[in-house]
Amino acid sequence: FTRNIADIEFPEDWAHWVEVIKPLFVLAIPLGLTELIWTLGIFGYNVIIQRIGDLELAAAQIANTLEGIFIVGSVGLAVAATALIGRSVGAQDRDGIFMWIKQIRGLGNITGLLFASMYAMTVFSLDTLFKNAGEDVRNAAVGAILLNAAVQVVKVRNMINAGGVLTSGSDVRGVIWGDVIGSIVVGIPAAVILGLWLEWGLMGVIVARSLDEIAKFFIFGFRSRRINWDALLAEHK
Image (cartoon, rainbow, N blue to C red; front, side, top):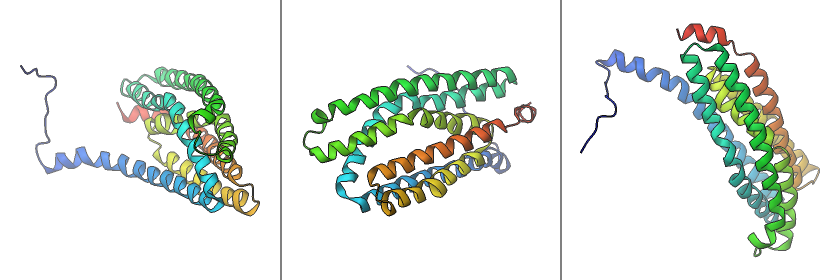
């Protein structure tokens, strides 16, 4: 049997279609640009690591793969921030906006520390998980894992601010600025200088990526503090 869950009502004419679709493009295009910048940044880091050596590239892939397993436990917080803050905006609940921002950021600190600790502990299982990778690769991966774990709380805060607070506050430009400055202005040049010119190798690139995240941390934090929630609430009355 069938059950009616929701009714679908399509726009009546072209003018109404434009009214519905235009805001989607206004939001989607900047977000698509941020994804492009993020992808270019990852590609740039990998190219630099490849220039350093295949061993370093293999070690970086091990560190990144393991990090992805643990940081996913915090990814949902950005989605939660978008939903809960957005609901408060729609309900004209100013206090609710700040309550959810505070609570989700606090939860992000907890999950960031918890999963970063678990991620760091994987250095003791590399011999088992990647026994065919070679001892040199595993040794190089240890430093990358520990440094990545050290900044995981910063990464989680960046996800919450960029993916939840700024987007809910209609400040997509802040997300773009953070990604551009973090990756293109700070991260990639630092990776070239530290990893190639100063010959720090893989650790130089990991340090550069950490500086990338730290730059985003300050930019996203600055932009989130500048959001005029009262004006935003007035627009959504």
